Each structure stands twice: as structure tokens, then as C-alpha cells.
Amino acid sequence: MPAEVVMRLARHPHLAVRRGVAGNEAAPASLLAALGTDGTLPPARLCYGCDASADPPPGMCCRGRHEGALVDLRYALVANPTTPPQTVAGWVEEPAMWVRWAVAERQDLPPEVYRRLAGDPVPGVRGEAAANPTVTESLIRVMASDDTNDVRRRLAHNPRVPLDVLAEIAPITRIGPALLPRIAAAGPAEVAQMARSPVAAVRMLLAARPDLPPEVVNLLAEDPDAKVLKSLAPNPALTEAQLRTMVARHGSRVVVRVAHNPTCSPGLLHELATHVPPVQKAYRIIAAHPHADAATLTLCLADHQGRPVAARHPTLPAATIIKLLDDPDERVAEAAAANPSLPRPAMETLLASWRVNPETLRSPVIRRSGTPVNCLQFVTDHRTAAQPHIRMDQDHGHGFAALRALRGSAAERSLALKEWNGMVRGKAQSGMSVTSLGPSAGASGARSNGRTTRR
Image (cartoon, rainbow, N blue to C red; front, side):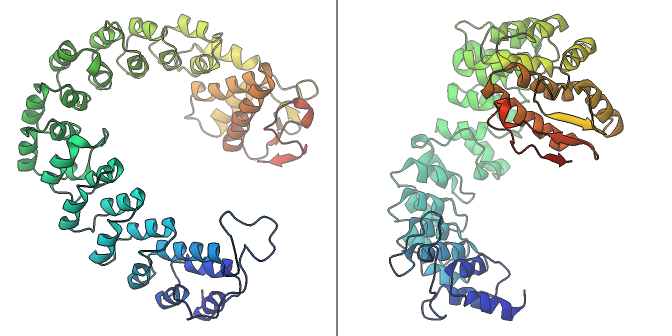
């Protein structure tokens, strides 16, 4: 944009226009500084809070000084990386929390600014400063004593946190199972040191690293702490014997994490599914494992969470998949319909059972040259003419959604028709049209204007 045009917009009497300039990263830094400095530009006369807008944006209150719009303007300036750091540093004590929060995200400010933000009364602002990779090590050590868990958690995710500080805050902070940047960047000597740390939380954080040397994996596999083994269990370098030892030592505490391991054998997965006492959360993980056999999947079908996942597994016997098509749970039936092991005759029967009849069904209609076509014909033609690599089972789930749209309740039809229209928008060929539901169909989510949209 020409510089003279940017200057004219920055002087616009409405603050909404100036706010647009404040968010433009191509605007000159000097102009952005002028927008954030009182008295540099002519004062604005209007904002959304005082221009008689019928529906002003939230927070645009105005008591004569455009208070809400000015806060929004400052936030845009802080979020704009082109705004000079010295301008942003002046809002370190801005009354609006969101402005200070955005200031804490900047990585080009003087150390004094971050020091002041570390004492902010809002934990979210302190947490953002704690996660900032540009803060000094001395400030990191000060913030390690913060009494808020979220601040310490964000500090643990700082890539520059010293390992001794991490060992200090890890036992008293809920960090979660994520791999920390500092752990991921640790060198071989640091990894060896952390593997023998007396702090179990440090060993647990290290165990989440997937590229550990074999000797470290073997060392951690003998760890007596169950939390360390839970973190280590998904590591593909573990042997089946080591996984079985984990389950034998700690039982239900590690079953779910062991089931996440991609090297689990069918026999081990079956043992996890028959574990006593049963671990309900493990069934849906086992049901999604590529090594699960038919007997194990049958056990997962008995669990309400594992049943929809198991119904989609290609190892499931064809006869069982066909039975699941009539399951009262629509999630299970639709997963079975999308199973790649569903026999083709069953796919064709299910797809062909839904035929477009716009006069009686009032449903979305796929037309070619004005003639309704059934779902199977559309899928077949689209797969062969447009994308030959699309498999029948991938299209089948959309056909089942269409079938559900016709047979379900009004609310179910509304949800299913949204899925159907989404498939049509993404897959319909050029020259086809989609006629959406009219108001008499009883689907709240469908269009009611009766227009035909060319796709």
C-alpha cells in the first residue's frame, strides 16, 4: 500500500480504521509507533461504542474517550511484530489484562519488561512470560518459586529452563505427558545424567523421549516407579518381555500405556484385554491397534467405548461387521459401514437401499442433467471418473450418513444432512447440483430457500 494511503488511513476519524492499520505488518514502524503514542496523530472522533452502530463488537464501551476501542488498538499494536519494542514496553502495566498478556508473548523486549511481567497479578500473564524463550536464566530461577501450577508448568515448557530448575519444579507441578523442549534438546551426557536422577519426575519426563539410546531404555525399564514406566511404555524400543514385566509389576496402572506401544503382539493385546481387574480405558486403545486379532476385538465390542473403534477394525470378521450394521448405536453402525473389510455385496446393498426421490423424501438430491441418481451410482461414477484411488469403503461412510438422514429423527436428519452436504461440497463433480432441504423436511440445519447451488 502506498505510504500516503497508509498515513491517510492512520488519521481516519474512526478508530476501527486505525485499528486495521495497527494490525498491518507492512505498515511503517514509525507510523505504528505514532498510533500508540497519545497526541502524535489527530484524536479520533468515532468508535464502535459511540457511532450509533446497531450491533457493536463486544467490549467496545465508550464513555466519551473510546476506552474499549483504544484497548483493542493497543492489543493490535502489541500483536504486530513491526511495532517498535519501545512502544510495546510502555504498556507493561496497561490496565487491560489482554494487552499485558500480548506484551508477555513478545520476544524482542528488554529484560526489565519481563521482570515486571513476572510479578503481574494475573497468572496467565506470568505464565506467558515464563514460557518466553528470551527470558534470562536468573528470571527463570526466580519464577520457579511461583505458587501457581500453571506458571510453573509453562516454565517447564520453556526451552531454556536449566535442568536443575526442572528437577526442582517437576515433583510439585502437573506438567502432563508431553515431551518438554528442554528434554528433547538434551545431549547424550545430560540424558545419561537424567536417567539416573534421584527425582522420579525427571526420569518420567525423560522416558517420554522416543529416541532414547537402548541402554537408557533398558535402564528405565527397570525403574521401580510406575509413573516412569507409564511414560516409557509406548516406546517402540521395548521388547515384549519388558512390556510383560511392566504389566506384571504394576498391573492396571500401566495397561493403557502399554496398549499404546506399536510393537505389541496379538497375544499381549489379548492379555491386556482380559486383564483382571479390567481396565476400561484400554479397550478403545486395543481396538485401534493394528495387531489386534479377531478374538481380542470381540472382547472390545463388549465395551461401550471400544465398540465403535472395534467396528472399524479391518481384522474383524465379515459376518460380525454385517451384524454391526444394524447396531442401535449409530456410531457403531456407521463405523461398521466404513470398515474396509465389509464385503462389497453388503456395501452395494446398503448404498443402493437409498435412492433419491425428491417428491416424497425431500432430501438432498444429486442431479446429473436434471435426473436424480442413487448414491451407489454417484459413488461409482465419481470414483472412476474423478479420483480412481478412492476406495469403496471411504465413500461408504457418507452413503450411510445419507441413509441415516432418511431414517432418523428430525435432529438426527439435521446432523446427517450436514455431513452429506459436506461430502457433496467436497466431492461433487463439475456440472452437478445440490438441492438442499426445504422447510417442510424438519431439518433445522438445512437451507430453506430452495435454491440450487452449482458445484
